[in-house]
Length: 334
Image (tube, rainbow, N blue to C red; front, top):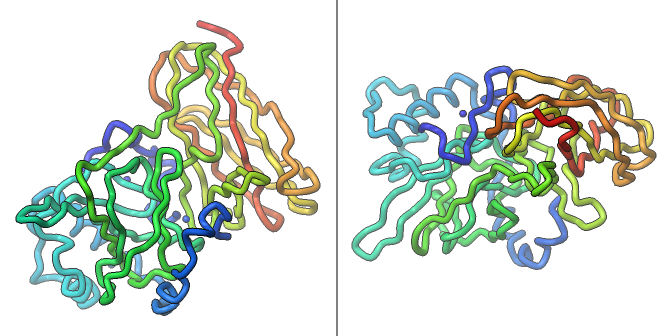
């Protein structure tokens, strides 16, 4: 999951899923006016492409980004159609500075002769919300569009914290991978996703800073929610990158809500691939009725950058939970 950029901490194999990935928030409502007719022009796809074709296409795109040739003469019909339908998405591209995203890959095509530089987003895992979150993209983008949109229509964008949110069709236009093009207005601005601790050492992992992996799970910015929610698919999961400055033992506190009758999900909170806490979600009488719970401790033997993964094990109810925040607090210094 191109070598990772500084803000792109690799996901351990135990938690990585190359095929497990992403209600439209009110904060974007004013931006969305007038876009419905545009999005309605894209028909729903019948089904995702076979895994083998998707993996082969990832290899082709990765080879192009790395400047390696790929054997066009041996491509099967689905891959050949994709290459023919996406001219320019493979030629002259190079690593774009974002690293791999939960939904796929990205690459930069340098501009020249009065043409802007382009950032290609190769989206394999399409989110049901109709939003594409580009993690770590902080600015420098003039417009967004679909590569194969004959009308060349702009897609609305909004900056959200350390990332950029793009409004896209709710259904993937291409069952293999859809190419979204970002036209740059200068240098691409990226930002580390790793969260820094407070002066006293505690680390707050808020839902707005979460990296979402899946099709339905999402950050809901409505002030009444302000949470990671829509967790109706037990294969969706979430992660945070963060820094620890001092080794020691840290208590883990979560702020969770859960609708009546949906309690009982089992969830694992794990740091990298070494420590894990298993938690049974508490029914709080409402998904936005948040309660604070101490779920255990993690030990960090040295300072550094870490990743917290939150992954469901079992979901007996409608949804796993709403998760607003995870706080790591030093309780014993080394």
